[in-house]
Amino acid sequence: MSRLPPGQQLVAAGKWPVVGERAPLPPPETWTLDISGLVEQPRSFSLGELQSFRAGQYKCDIHCVTRWSKLDVVWTGVELRTLLDACRPQPAAKFVSFMAHSPRAHSTSLPLDDALQLGVIVVWAADGVPLALEHGGPLRIVTPQRYFYKSVKWVSRVELLENDRLGYWEANAGYHNHADPWQEQRYLAARVTKQEAARLIASRDFRDRDLLGIVAAGRELAGLRAERALLRNADFRDAQLQGADFTSANLSNAHFERASLQAASLRDADLEGANFEGADLRGACLVGASIFGATFVPPGTPLAEQARRGARVDRHTQFNPVAFEQLTPEQADYLRRTWPQHGG
Ligand SMILES: Nc1nc2c(c(=O)[nH]1)N[C@H]1C(S)=C(S)[C@@H](COP(=O)(O)O)O[C@H]1N2
Ligand SMILES: [Mo]
Image (cartoon, rainbow, N blue to C red; front, side):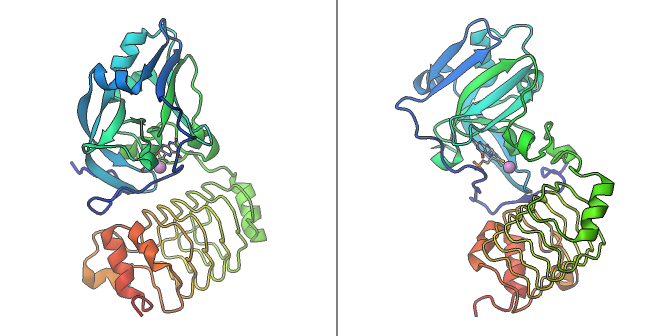
């Protein structure tokens, strides 16, 4: 069986993208992990206590919802189960909420049974090195076999609950609450009804709207105004989008396969995990866009077929070439080879 869930691509060896928040709130003098809620014995563990508890090494893979994966990371930490045993969960406890000491009080949650069965770990090192601050140091959660948004950075509190409490992305961005990468559970269903979508498509004005998962495949949308729109997981396959303005839009995991995006603006857009296979990007602007995990040519396409199946770019297409660093090696090579501006 493939190690890579559907729709995922490997990051370059040694690379580990930073996703979401980049730093915690100012760390307190001594970091503690508090376990509370439906437990007989609430506890507060210091880092030292955690590290002396029953530290182990756990190998597991990272699968980010924005389509990059990193395999075989060796985490050093302690199993959540071990900590919970010390707190004695009450029978009414059915969910576990993980809370971060971070600017937006980030959180995520899992059914308690899943957390135990998946082997959730509380970790302080990866591949033998203490976790960098941007990756959740000094302490983060790692939830194996789920998209990485189920792994909170800078975890400071674990609370057992009777009813689920949706996490930050799950509540605010339509991320799927089950998050199984093998079933591609990235997002919930579209935020807009079919009728509403049809009306908006006719108006060609998506500005500032939350249209997660909107289906606009094959539509005639030249000149679309979509500045700052929330279009995660939107379906624009084969759409006519010449001159469309997606400045600062969130298009993470959006589908643009074979779309006409000539002279479109994707400036400062979030294009993480977006798919541009076979799209026409001549004259389009992607300056300032975040392109982690984006696809421009179908992964694994033989070189001889890439020109036919990949995105079309020309010397009027605008990229920050440094952003190619955010791509998998195969995708970066494709753009370096086909973009006439590169190096010149
Ligand atoms: N506190 C906090 N934890 C977080 C996030 C965040 O924004 N804040 N983002 C989540 C998402 S979507 C991912 S993919 C991973 C990214 O972890 P990394 O930056 O170490 O790769 O952290 C998860 N945990
Ligand atoms: Mo993510």
